[in-house]
Structures are given as structure tokens and as C-alpha cells.
Image (cartoon, rainbow, N blue to C red):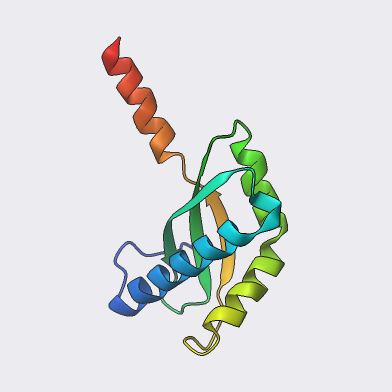
Length: 116
């Protein structure tokens, strides 16, 4: 069953923006990912605020899937750090699922095709 609805409530949007900001900062400060430029492009959260899909855009590296996989391996530590930061603002720290956002690659490919 798909719990990620296309119509987010105001609360979901607010928590999504908070998660996006905090996760961006966590990944920026992480020693494990210093060699790659990682951007959290968006966060979709379920209505019960228990699960979040985190879309990542990875620049300046050819191993995008490897970076996202490595982030997924560090999921527990990232979630713990997130919990330390937002524990006074939410009751439940959502389970995180990291997904490679290839939207920019797709747009670049279309741009190259149009130039030909």
C-alpha cells in the first residue's frame, strides 16, 4: 500500500521542510560524504509522520548509486543525529528511506538532445 499521498497537509509540509534542512546539515557535516556534493531536494512524509522518503541529488561524482547506498548504510546514525536535533519538535522521529533523485540528470539529457 502506498502511504505517500500526493496531497500533503500543512503539518506534513512543515515537518518535511524541517527534515530537509536538518538532513542537509547532517550530510554536509558528515566526514563520510565530504568528497561528494549532496543536496536534499525534497522530503515526502506519510500522514502519520512515521516514514519519510528523502530524495538526494548527488553532484561531482560518477558513483551516485554508491553514494546513496552508503548513505542508506548509515541510516541508523543519520536518524539518531536527526533525533537529537528535532526531538523537541516532533513526537516520532520518522523512519528514513533515501532515494536518488535523478531529475537533474533527466533534464540535462533532454537539454543535450534538444541541442543536437
